[in-house]
Length: 485
Image (spheres, rainbow, N blue to C red):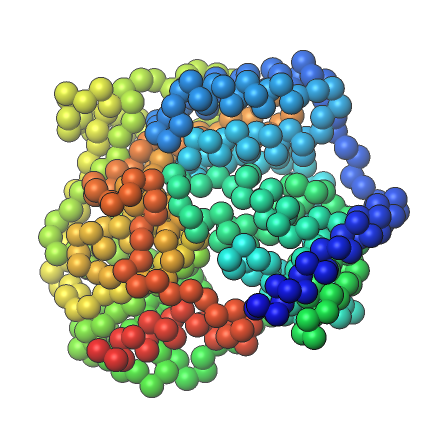
């Protein structure tokens, strides 16, 4: 890595030339017509956004006080001008929303914009790893390219890697001060974030540090992502149960004393059956070590996560959420799904558990499972993409069930998140859509540092070289640790 860094500076000297190449490429690009707006239209959308986001959001001032949020809103408002495009306005909206410190408050372009992009996709044709604020190639879709996995990217179309990452981090909505979320999500959504920031191209000039420590440039044709190839897996692992390819219970190679429950999302079908069968198997086989893999789990349906906890928590527990005791503003641009509206009405019928609090506090009680309850050793694997309900599950297990966590800090805050139900704001002129949460899900814990994610007891970083070969370096590290005990 030290040698690569030496030659990175030399590579960056080529970026001015790359900028000219990118300009030449753009002249021949078949661009989607740019939608531009008047300053009056932009200001009307901006003012409506600020007003309604702050009126709906349950904890908009948790990390930035009201005066500072309005000051920032006015600063960005002054950047509006005639001729600003949808993409440019969307980036400004995201940059302001990030000040709130809520990963569930997310802005996206309108549905028509996405439809146009999909009809003629010109996305950057590669996936990346991001580690220590550096970009590495994970895969390239252009089969004619000389770029290979593992190369460090130092520039794309004249934009330096440092500039790209800084711009991506600035538009990524995150919970509080989570340090791992921005890089993890920017890695997962790299192609989309690049499109948001720099637009589409017929071709992308990508410059990397090659294996001989010299700079290598290649022009990649923009296009849609091909069907994913089957990722290399440990062929010696024994799969016990599989639920829709989203949740899996398996035994790692050459291990019969430990099981891994890999849950990619809390939204799969037949989840009750999967949990029942999984914990029944663990009981029958007398397996007393369990790894629950929540890496890249962005959350999902809250009963799903709580049903898992019923097999793991030491005693009955509550799912606690609340919101300010005020009605949602009635506005034609604010909508909520019918099922969410009905659920909110049901929540309104629930008793307020703390009448001294100006908020309405709701609790849903869960009893632990007696049959096949797991009382063995539990480890929870997390990373920056562990968000929302997966952060809640990790927090509950770490603080209240004696489980240990490994990997990286979660993207979701340890103290709780703004979630449960969502409203959707569609701005009238630009069509920008903003998801705004309605409730605050309180984890009822007191972390050492408010606003950070669930912190791992055992920090394990990825080995990109092993990842490229299809090996799970983080899980391997944890299994070695468990084998030593």
